[in-house]
Length: 214
Image 1 (cartoon, rainbow, N blue to C red):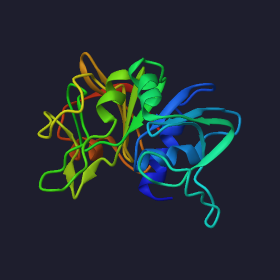
Image 2 (cartoon, rainbow, N blue to C red):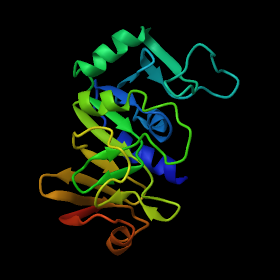
Image 3 (cartoon, rainbow, N blue to C red):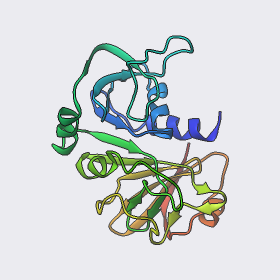
């Protein structure tokens, strides 16, 4: 199991039966592959689909079925497609239960920066601003560091995606909950220690009294 799969598996445990969930491009799309069989979740993509299933097997891709990042997806029975205006009406109207997004930085106040990489050509933030602002719950799924540098920082140096505080941060090392008091360390990976998490985190963490493992 690689790091991204580990993060996706942990995020999948946050999803509840019957929820409408948006998966951002990149790592978050892997979450659809790890939903328990007894949980039925409706996955939405901002390019206009509800009812996405796991990624298709090699050779069974349909060029007309992709997510917002252009990756091939499957459609479950009862899935529907629609235009971008309808899709963003769902997002901006507050109808999404959860959005799972990747992140470049999250700061001590729970602010997310996830769309601008310095000195890189990028197409823009896509639907990230709308998703963070409109979804009922925002989960950030990202690696704990980038090239050895912490991604959970005291203050974001990249442009914020939204002024809204995210609800949960899941990395390969830890599960962290932003609160009014600060970032609360709730869980750590079985393969790490609290000291290692603290060492690789630039922001201050509040240690939960009962740290669980995943």
